[in-house]
Image 1: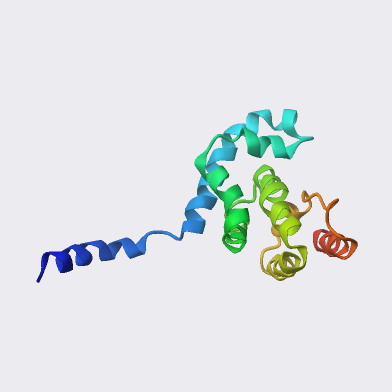
Image 2: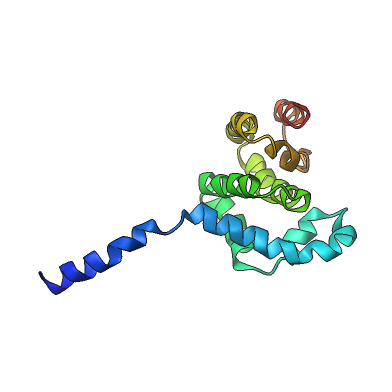
Length: 148
């Protein structure tokens, strides 16, 4: 056995590392939880809560929305699957999903509609998406999703 073969063999267990979307989702939740005591002060401006969260995971997820939107979507969905905390759901809606919808409303509204059937909590997150910059058809579909 060559040295490089032994080295590769030693690294194989690393393949069991959790899904990166799961790691980022758990980091997002952990970063926003400490802000809970000031929820009332930020209630009118959820964007401020995301900006206040000083954590690499929050910054990474936001940047991921521009660089790899499908991966950002996966992280947003994982956050929704992991929590029933209304504060966290509101923040993921107003940041991750709102950014993705503004990027490509037709594509992401279709994915959101399908996933809302599977994960009903998603509707709570979507209720916080600002749809002012969406076209009328996308805004109508978004409203229908939050009411269903």
